[in-house]
Image (cartoon, rainbow, N blue to C red; front, side, top):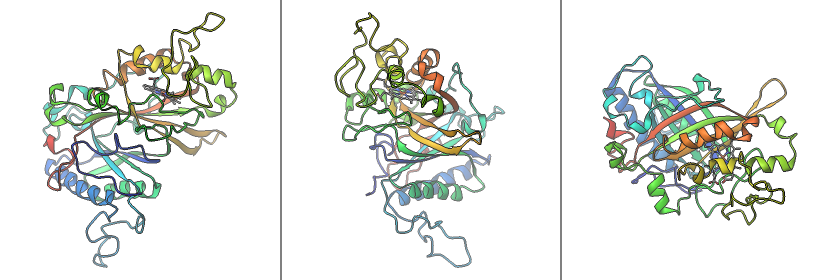
Length: 378
Ligand code: HEM
């Protein structure tokens, strides 16, 4: 429950071993004043450095300031350890040009090609009010109170400059981002994250995760891109599906997470292997076949999603699913081909619905106390 270092070449919260809890938030910038935006980003960065170290959001703290003023920290994390809190900051395409086509902050020329809007995918049922956003912050921690506290204090500090567009709580990571972690399970009961890109695969992380200046945007060198998709599961239908069908959908067994072609969890699937009936053991429409790099020109993703349950929907069904998040060097070469393949063919689609979508440029890490989130943009 110690602190994760805030300063560095890359932002924390990406290859950091995935913590158990999430509070993700997207903001709209409600001012056109560039200086005000920059000032808030500086304030945010200082508060983030403090909170990830387990300190109050502001130096005077929750109870150390003048009695007549609102406190510099909201107080609900007093006495709690840092809980491996990471705060990861991102910028959406609408910051560069808003819905009316305006370049409010004089940064349109810096928009990276990789931040082009995602295409529409078959089956998308996106709700605009929980999609997009000018800015985002991914707060991950081992304690939900710590993650919520951090997001709340950033929203408080940003008052008058940003407003919360939507936020999402996640419990239970659905990915491992380090080989040191056991693979967790998603709400369909399957191990999730087995074939994920992991921090220890350093060559792959360099090639598939971090953007370089040569990719076209200097200010993004050492950064990456985040795709978020809120995916609602029709849990009740899934729960009436046979075990054999559930396993066929993913192409892995439910107990161990081993590929249906045989072997153990971390053995490579053998997509060519056929059963006695001459049919492939991993179906052509199975999720792992369609999502596998060999079906997508070698594309890999660093998945870092979370289970969510937003209560129930008033019709006797759980409002539950996966808040999918993936980090990649170029979403148009990685996420997009994979999702295109899945949207067209995946039999899992019978049980899921994509209801929100976000794409954010995640700048490189903050170097020191003089640097700030997104400094390369201004
Ligand atoms: C693999 C579940 C959506 C990309 C897997 C696995 C499970 C799973 C159980 C196998 C274990 C593993 O390697 O992690 C789900 C569920 C989804 C979902 C329940 C929706 C609710 C997506 C989406 C994408 C995606 C939207 C990307 C567009 C991948 C990739 C793999 C994978 C790249 C690894 C394939 C491989 O290399 O073997 N997923 N997934 N998944 N999924 Fe998903």
